[in-house]
Length: 480
Image (cartoon, rainbow, N blue to C red; front, side, top):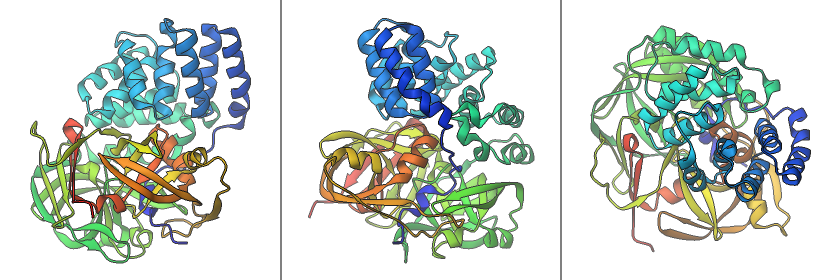
């Protein structure tokens, strides 16, 4: 089976499984915390569950701590972090009201950074990051959040040295999140040094362009000029990243030089890639300067239908409207004015992944909005939880991706209902993807219950995101 959600996983690090030494410690630690009810027992159990990336155990501990030790402020950071990792975003944000920027607890400060960046509250996130930096934490995992805040704020002047420091501290034996750090930072300090301190991903002129559907892969595309060369046909991917992905041959034609070596992880493995900087990207009358770019065999990864992928996170300073009814992309300045249609809750997580709360079969869930996937699917764990008495059919998918390893595991179950942005879909899909549990969830730090792609986007007239203000609107077409 060809996997139509292949683009969803490009540019992710090769996520290693948590060290089994941590995984085997989780259950005894949880039992002890629930039996003894002490702060020390809970803190130890939270730490072990986090390092094992056992978000289910973390959620269980958070619920127990809130019930058994509701006034214990020493557990607040761990409670918020665990709720967020489990996808309980609203609960995490509500509990975070108890956290303070003046804390000396790295877990508290990292949780504040995470939640604030998800709402594009860059100033407050930097405030917590500077406090965390002053504490000079010893663990690489705590420095990740300082890096995230500075990169989002485009404070890149001293970032290369900080990345190298984190790389030296990283040890997969420490468990999550250091298990994913190796490839995530590969070549990045060299890229930052070569690129220089000037702001990255600048929108130098707002405008619009045609947005036709790309044949074969059935995804929205745009024609792009790279440093005056082209045009190159590229997928417009809301599930992409804060970078442009450019085919290696196209990069050579356009004179784009690799500044540092890295690798990419596709749905079927990993392959060599390069960090690069494109000085000018023109998409119709839209112009971006100094765009972060990864160069690899994109044409192969898109079944030779596209020359590149535009991660919509490159528009992070502005507002983007994808007009599916008329096939048009518009990028404008961020504004306090409401967009067209229904306001929908949004969190921008990790590398500008668009995450929104949805309802799946009557249960609350978290969905990633991905125009680079022609599929609607659930995580395997969510699908099994919804249909515990059903025996799913599972098989490996073939994908147009990099590398040569096995593709993702697909599960088939009865169709599930989905409510998103005020619209209800009955039996929209019965597809389950293990990569939502094993790759996307650990990478973005939030359990990803659903991947919502083009089958839903096609029902919209317009989809608008104001990145800088973390606001989103769906303008639906009339239901048939």
